[in-house]
Length: 248
Image 1 (tube, rainbow, N blue to C red):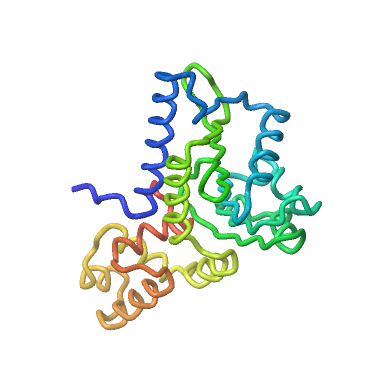
Image 2: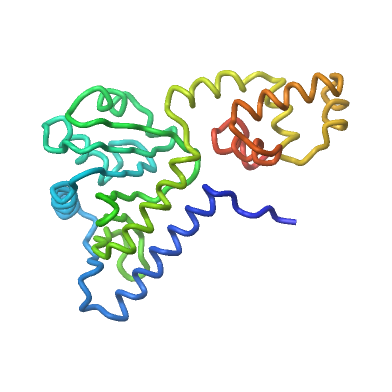
C-alpha cells in the first residue's frame, strides 16, 4: 500500500496544484489583474523582482531549486542585499546544490538578515513578499518558460503557508552537514535502508548481525538526528537528505 504524502511532500504537491489552478482561472478571465504572465527573460524578471522587493515591508521568502547562478529570482535578491537595496529579512529555502560559496558569502553580507534552510525536496522557484505578492517561475503548456506575477493576496498567502510548511521540515546548513556526517557510516546507512523498506527490528538486527538491543539503540539515535516520529519517516528523510538513493 502506498504511504500518504508527508507534510513536506503534501505542501509541494499542493503548491503545484495551486499554480495550475491559478493559471486556468486566469485564462478563463484574462482581464483580471490578479495574475500576470511574463516572458522568462532577464530584463522582465529583473524588473518584476525589483517591483516585488520595493513592495515588501516585512519579509521576503525565496525558494532556490538549484544554484544561485541558475536562479532567476535568487541572484537579483542577493545582489539587492549586497547593495543595500533589500533591507527586509530574507528566508531562503534551497536544495543542497544551492549551498555553494556564493550563497555562503551572501549570508554574511548585505543589509537585513538572511536565514537559510536546506531541503532535499523538489522545489518550484518562488519569491513571496509579505505573504501578499509572489513571483512563480513555471513551464506552462502554450507559454513555455515564464514567470507568473501573483497579485491576489489569498493565493499569495496560500503559497506563503505552503512555504512555511516546507521550511518547518528543512534544516539549517550547518545542521544539514552535521547530520550527513553523523549518518554516513556503513552501519547507519544499512539501518536506514531497512527503515525505509519497513523491515522489522528483529529482522534488521539479524541481517546486519547485531543484537536487537543494539539495533534499537541505533534506530533511536538515527530518528533523533533526523527529527523523525516514525521509522518510515526516518527512511524518507534520509532520502531527502541524500543519505539514501530513492532508486535503491
